[in-house]
Length: 164
Image (tube, rainbow, N blue to C red; front, side, top):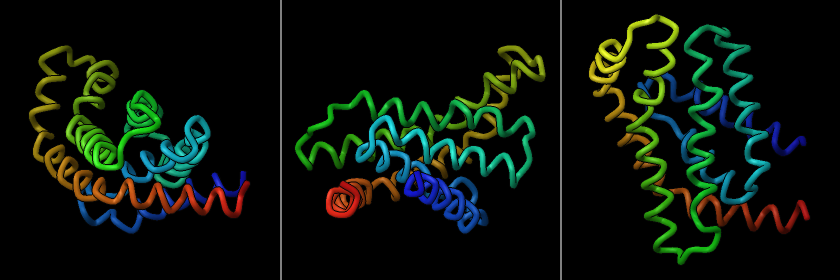
């Protein structure tokens, strides 16, 4: 449990450190890495991060989509085969991570349309208005995604050596 608490705290701290860069962070990479290595247990650090964000940044309406948006990335990685050739894994995991960044605003939009009762038009307007941030998110996740397989291999080796 201590390991997962620390991994969640690492996600939170990395988010704070990179806050000056809009939508550029290593959260997607960390979620994919944790999912590759820990599978179902990766939900623990993920929700430690989500709870820390809510506690320290306020449990406002922006926080509610965090309860499902990051879980969708975890779920997408869980659907990929466990064992892939390294070259395919590099492309697959990076692609999933980058696409999650591109779709981040799209995943937020239904919640905001629901609570603010804007309907389809408001939801589409939200997506279009924030698309440039989603592009930044895409490229940030694409860059961070290049490190997924090496970091997952390292964490897996450390996990086998010290925690088993």
